[in-house]
Each structure stands twice: as C-alpha cells, then as structure tokens.
Length: 225
Image (tube, rainbow, N blue to C red; front, side, top):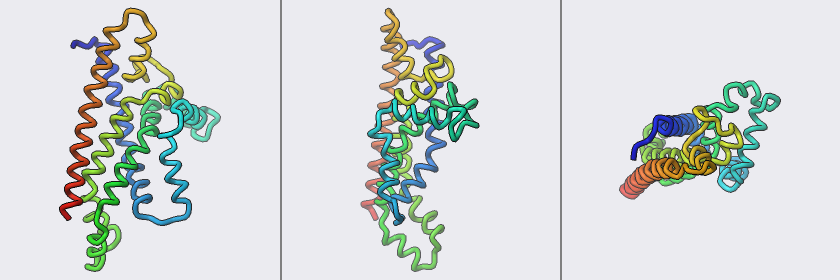
C-alpha cells in the first residue's frame, strides 16, 4: 500500500493533532482523575457528570458548544484567530472528546493504589506532596500511560465535533476521518478510502494493544502489593 504525498500529509496532520491533544490534555485529565478518586467535596457527582458528558452527548453538539465558546463574541473569542479553521482547533475538539476516556482510565489506576501504602508513608513523616510524588504517582503511571494511549486513539478517530467546530480544511484541519468522509463523497475515490481506512485501523489497533498491555501491567502492579 503506497500513500500519495497528500495522504501522507493527512496522516502526519492526524498524528500531530492527536499528540498535541494528548499532551495538552494529560495534566488536566490527571488532575480531574485525582480529584474524583481521592478528594471529597460538594458537587463531586456534578463534576463527574460534566467530565463524562462528551461521552454521551452527540459530537455535533459538543462541536457547536466549542464554536460558541471560541467564536469572536464568545468567552474565548480572543483565541478565535488561532483556533477557528486551524489544526489547533481540531486538537481542542479531539481533546474534549477524549477527556472522559482518559479521566476514567487514570482514575481507575489511582483508585487501584493501596491507600495503606500512602497511610504508611504519612506515618513515617512524609507530607502529602511527597506521598503523591513517591507513592501514588509511580504506582499509577502504567494506568496513566494506558489512559493516554486510549485517549490518543479516540482523538485520532474524532469526526463530529471537529467538522462542526473547525470544518474540513484540506492541509489544515483535514484529519483521517474527515479525509475519508470527503473521499466517500467523490465517485472513483474507493482506493483512497481503502488506503486511509487501512491506516486508521492499523494506528488504532496498535494504540489499543499498547493500552491493553499497559493496563494489564498496572493491574499486576496493584495485585503485587
């Protein structure tokens, strides 16, 4: 299977959007996961519901909300020039859609850390930050990586929110799903659809296998304690 120069550009753009979305999302997802796993505060159920909202909301609605937020008259309108019809906007849409999966995976990994280890570290004089840095974070790393890879796979397949938020601009926002959709609208583009779909399947399979292996490693680590 040989991709054309244009198709390679679409693949590379998709990878860039997915990687940037995950790097930007990781600290936010980890913070939210830690809050939901360890903290007690009023409104925790509401925060949990809001985090998971993109999972059940139609992607087009999520994209429309992003459009309202980043429109020139919206609350983040000062960023509209750098986001609308740009690959950065596609990365934002991908990150929002991947947020629930990442938070859920990271939350489960944090909850799997035995609290007795954290309590033992505290009785030995370690502060909260040191317990987090030396106990909680290292033991949850495989789960965090698994959640990140899973989120990357989800970001790579994002379609509805992206096309609603930043449209399909060749060379700028045309990621793999959008390119496949565009090719399907043109007669005689079956070969291109097959090639792009095969690349999507291959990348997603690798990401899912990597995520599963990391999740199993996290599970073994938790049971070994």
